[in-house]
Length: 356
Image 1 (tube, rainbow, N blue to C red):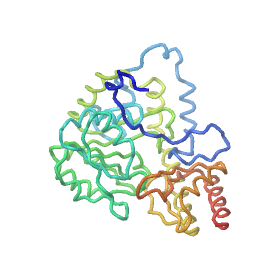
Image 2: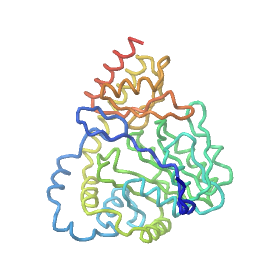
Image 3: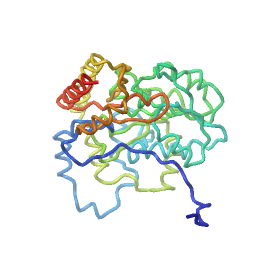
Image 4: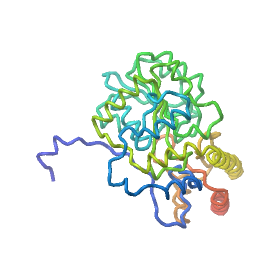
């Protein structure tokens, strides 16, 4: 049925999030969550929350969280913007910075929320093809544009883009905002982040999340680091849209997580070590995959279609992520879980593949 009012409705193809099964027996490796829960310090901080404060609006400026992040990154407190996960922060960035008639640029194989935001906000965009090794081509981003978004490391490919290459793009686009989405940077080699370049380039915005390395996907905490002028513009848009984006528990627990550096480093090392072991096991089983700089891997089997493996794994209560998209429809994105979970995955794959 066609309704007369449909002509005035904004219609978009929505982002499709990964499945969130409730069965605790499922090995859930489809949404790149951290398999290690928050530390004992965070559990204590949660118990110490004042429930009496739930009746009041939270601090609109999220001052405590902003201060902790500024101290952690050794930047000014006017250089940090916080939001409800990096999705909220990125959405605000698109809304604030991309108002040119020129197209913004981002890779063709990347976080699938980027084109959704662009279409929702009527932002012209152009996707640029990764090369045959799933690498970003610097030269593609030197063309005329209205802004650039690059996830580093990229998802779902798991590949890190070199800081020197990012600098070339920053140098060539000084009239446009460059957003580097560092959702997975904590799993990459030390020194890969470009946060230390924000004072050098006034067109750089770096976005981070607590959902991956900080074990707080359920609380939704994200942030951006940039220069004071761009952060002010972000806050102006935020306060014009929704002043109270950060709730009280997210502010308090997010602040506590930043202080818990030892636990953070310990869990990162566990994931990276497991990732290395699992990568070797996959290659022994006939998979090819890039060396990952994230908390997931992106394998392709030499003879068995990815969709078949995905469906068989799901029947065995193991959830991977499968994208039925050009160039990557024969690959799986597999989150790195605990050692026990990944050993179970390897055993499943061994049994399944020997019968193919």
